[in-house]
Image (tube, rainbow, N blue to C red; front, side, top):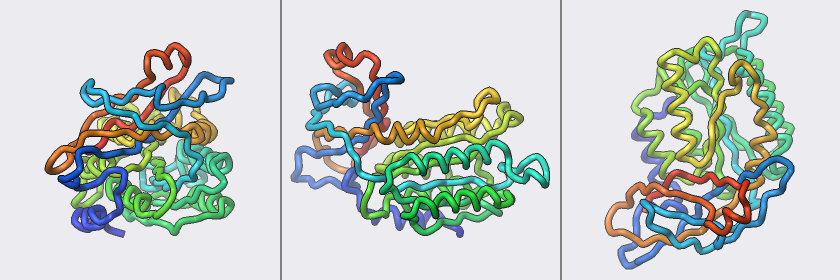
Length: 313
């Protein structure tokens, strides 16, 4: 499957985008946006119920009006981007898939087990210099079987990472219902995409209301390589734009069990409905800061918030 930049953008421009509109009605003076916020607390304590009185949102230190804050139990449309290119080679023919990737796939299956029972899944696989996207799977046992099959795939070929991520974002956005999430399991290194680059994917991540999480399968031997460092930085930046996080599947040689962590984090997701002043012409990217109010900070001292880095308005 080969996706050129023009075909990517032609599909992208006609996708529904109620949260981040492409054009503003010149007669409107204000717009409303829904911003996903992940709320974290220390262990052994439940997440408090937050309201619009507890959260501040600002652009360049200019406060934006928070209309409401609600916790959402709506299921996710989850896309798994799994890099089975040559970077996932194992140590030998008996171990054709790297230990980092094998562990990541085990955690992915654990995440499916622990996630919302109504979540739906699709897979984007990079293998043999190709990008393939599966149908959407509603049956979680079938989804886990697909994960097992992927772990038995022989890694090969170059990596069309940007094409794969761009296609995954579009596919998630095109789904008519559900919150949107793309989980990237890769080292982030691209050596084969045509007509689309990091800046294109970055712009897509900014414009679409899709959460991005990255789990870097870079091996210990690749930590110091320039390509590995660049790939890791790009995944981190994209995840921050999308309101998620990234971390290495193995950090300092130790496996990071993220299946439960991610399932719990998504279960503690809130949405802040904010109001902004409409601006004439084409919307611009605006950096956002989301934090607790001073009073909420006193009441919920161990609570931290994470949200998208910005929106277009």
